[in-house]
Image 1 (spheres, helix red, strand yellow):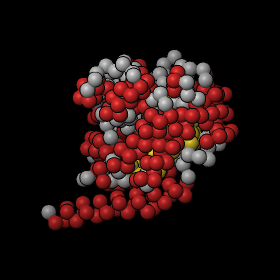
Image 2: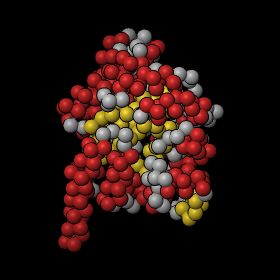
Image 3: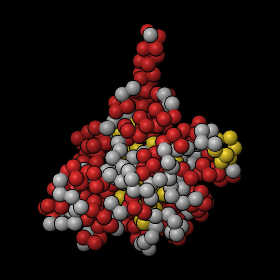
Image 4: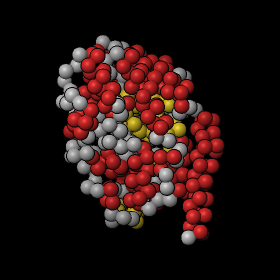
Length: 358
């Protein structure tokens, strides 16, 4: 199966986690940033590879350098544009990309200026490729400015910014420390997705859903701890897991990233396949394309080969993502009906014909 040619939808990807290495080097040179750990493409690519990081906290350290070169509106717009171009080349037709508007304040930029730069870059990529791109504004759990992030995001609600997110290290920084921001986001009409159950316990997922009102969960894989999971099959669910499944709360799963942060020791021991087959609303995502050296094509292929997923399974997972999106519904419905279903039906038909001929 040609996974790259499959139309795909992406809900969980960090703008500053997917910058081209070449762009980092060029921007660092232009801006006089001398802190890069390597000065050539191969060396810097290897350094950014966090496949052996071993923990979420260490994995996150690599963002120091991408944030450092996102110091001007022009640089941010360029990175946003290149993100759209790269995703479109990977077969992505719809994506919601998250970033922290507060991070560039160290460079003297306002939150509003960074949001506008990202929207400008996405608009340029859309005009060139047709890819549908939306923005999610993130605040960090260990910071105290989440309300200010939401206030900065609200004016752009009808301009391509669709949701608010809480990111950063989970342990010791509960999501409900940010109840005011979550409530403000919901009241304003922003979608609410929260990183939870990535590196902390399933209680983090409960806080995100029950206390904060999240309608999607970033990662969420520790929900498996609220089930009887033998490494292959889920046989029963505790109340929290049943709530996540039965209320159709989407999980933004990133298998490769989870392996990089040692959430699971191997792809075969990851619960994605079991969660999918038990009826959870799972989606496939890249998280950080640079740090995990991963594309969405890679993630689809990894899931398909590890968990024996066929075209109909990948179609369902892709439709899960589009139905869980926060962007314009008629636009998402059009993609489902006119792009996703025909493409996957064609693949299934071709596979069936090949099987019959052999």
